[in-house]
Image (tube, rainbow, N blue to C red):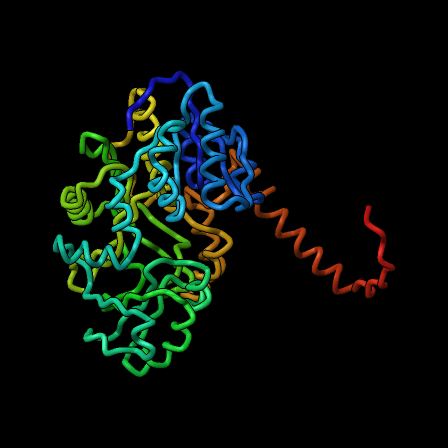
Length: 406
């Protein structure tokens, strides 16, 4: 995208505090486009909020964004955090570019990376180091086929949606240790209503998942990068991240740079790898969008959203650390204590670690309202409401006589 100079352009954020905070730490205020209740609405770094409840669908959101962007004296910088937001920006890039500045890879590459089936085809075409995988078409395979892979395997959807959420039991994927287990899973998987990928599982726990994070400018230069690893997920196996840590893995960075070159990627991206017992790195996925790691990276000294904002607004790039500080950690307090308990860590040991954790989802001493108003108060209000309903059950409503309508 072409850049236009602006004195004080703000950020338009399709996302949460993990984008608002790194921008705020760089002195950039945000306009947050979010569903009501998003804790980022209450941040001191949020200039204002545009509440969007899903009405009007994708076209309605694009129209609202364009009205918002064109009403500003300078085009805002647009940031996006989830897959559906990435696809929205990519598929409507020409219209949105009239009102916003943003970075995004080439449209076909975006589609290839988001759709797991297309990503597998791309990986095979480019010789990327992905585990052996087979695509299964549910309509053509009402019973589980022989995948021709070594067990254990993991089963994951081409696209994660609400239907997969139920079939996947709250996780990103499901594991089958034998053909018999795959057959037992099949009736539940059939409810996902989406084609699936069956993939050989790289041995080892989720703590062996490492990642490379990068911002590649329009000239193809790496403007900023860092590496990290997972500490805990919930569920423990194939779950969502609850604790993360910046690493200093030279081989992860080297492989990430090589894959950036081979893909011809520009913009921001996260490369997820799993390290096998022999040390080999296997590529699991590539996410060409902003994500929760960018908060942790900014605290560790490498603020990728701030670099993007500077480039798109024609400002000098902010000074960054030569390397992100290894050992800097992030956690999601409302879930990580459960992951720690499930992994055998005592409450006191976890609490001691959590208090030392440099970055926390929605919670910081210098910006407390996202946690107090967006997390703690809804939780307490919900508990109070449930308790009141138990002690003072509502009487059955009396039937009312119909009223005439004007």
